Length: 64
Image 1 (tube, rainbow, N blue to C red):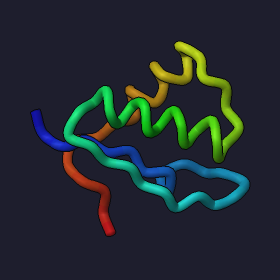
Image 2 (image 1 turned 90 degrees about the vertical axis):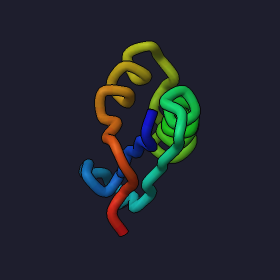
Image 3 (image 1 turned 30 degrees about the vertical axis):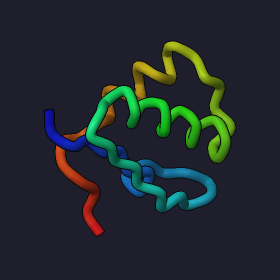
Image 4 (image 1 turned 180 degrees about the horizontal axis):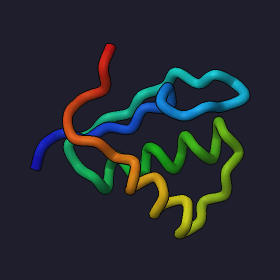
């Protein structure tokens, strides 16, 4: 299993978030992404949020 990432720069936000997260484990990345979405973007930790975030994961590492 290769490294995966999610990059907030790919999605519009009111705060212009520039955070990118990556991990070797999809479960680890999901937990980090959920924590970020809740703490920074005020989302609720729901099964729907987790499904949506997981669908946005990409293979590799985020661009610099």
